[in-house]
Amino acid sequence: MRILITGAAGFIGSHLCDRFLSEGHSVIGMDNLITGNTRNIAHLAGNPNFHFIKQDVTNYLYVDGPLDVVMNFASPASPIDYLKFPIQTLKVGSLGTHNTLGLAKAKGARYFLASTSEVYGDPLVHPQREDYAGNVDSIGPRGVYDEAKRFSEAMVMAYHRFHGLDTRIVRIFNTYGPRMRLDDGRVVPNFIGQALRGEPLTVYGDGAQTRSFQYVSDLVEGVYRLLMTDFHEPVNIGTQLELSIADFARLVNELTGNTAGIVYKSNDRIKGDPQTRRPDSTRARTVLDWEPVVGLNEGLAKTIEYFRSTI
Ligand code: UDP
Image: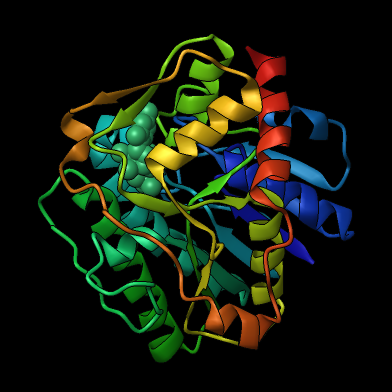
């Protein structure tokens, strides 16, 4: 297949490029590089099955030749990034999704949207099932991302229902692994960076808020399976292992041998910070026969190694 991947120079996008290339497909990677980095795809230079186009998907898209699949993974995705780029985040989720949908329609391509657990906001239902409509503050600090992704989902379903486009939607829960940016502000790079520098880990609030962390190769497997399955409703991909952020900090200190401990901080990030987050994965299990296979200690060890080599 000939596949367009937007956000190709990002953390998840670059791992998707690797996966599709390893399956023998031809990949066009697109990125405007505001949060992505060509370092993540540098190893693909010279690969005849890979082409990179530096392009902002919020502008009109022109891609030469046939396309079988459009994978839309372009967006700032960390709270720090989307607070820094609020307008771009709203534009990529609205105009970017519209443009990539239009391109898929023109090419007769299958369309795949990277959505997010953020569509559930600060959830009042736990764990989150795909039919839970969420609890989102449209004007809160996360609104620019949450509402852009909710709009994206609505747009994808409209193209599916009105134009008959062959679409997929994945809702991605917290994912970590090599190629995350050390300065993207998310908890995994923050904690590992601090631990490797021998600094105390900064836990925001009381650390009782929870997250479920999955390793990137498990996510990529779920995405691949969903693309190959004829299923049009959203599917959560995330792990059942739910940890408080304070426990997660203790684990990172233990795995890195950091003795500097933890500091509890109150900051602006706390506003709208979801208090719990864990997917109900029944749909992924039954529709995709998917389960995460990489344990947290194993995945973190690989991620720590990656950050050690980049610091
Ligand atoms: N967090 C923290 N310390 C940090 C960075 C994040 O305690 O240095 C917390 C943050 O408040 C949130 C959780 O870790 O409760 C996960 O944050 P992240 O930015 O990774 O993504 P989110 O899941 O909130 O989108």
